[in-house]
Length: 156
Image 1 (cartoon, rainbow, N blue to C red):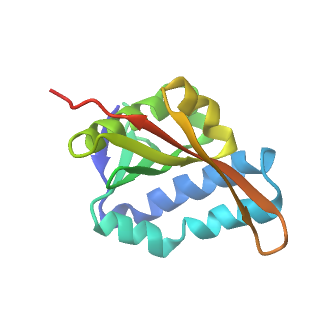
Image 2: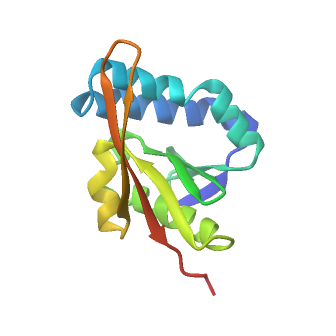
Image 3: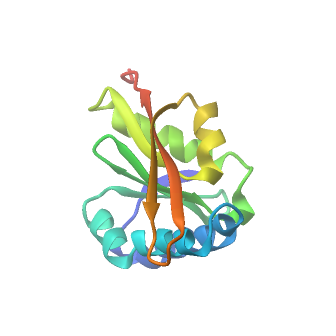
């Protein structure tokens, strides 16, 4: 596997990984309004902005298939998604370690907002609860998530 910076030409790939994962996984955890919120939150504009800022990365399998993506902005980990057919193979952990190494170069703490499907994974990797949050969506559904953090050790 390899992780590389996404270029503007990778926009559709990043968008597809993000939207396919949200549509396949999130309805098992969230009501429709919250799923729609996630899809809107990870808009074309925000993905393109993050790619142009050099903050988006793609994970490719050994057979050169794009399987996941992660975005880091300052000390925050955002948009970490692995396509459902590639989940359970260690790709999410690889993306998380990559993001943490990138953050550890300049920050003492990594922070992220954690969706319900991913909470157990982040706890496994040493993240701790910081704050419980809710957002009321357009149709009255609620999106519930935790903000979490983890101290970073400088890489040698």
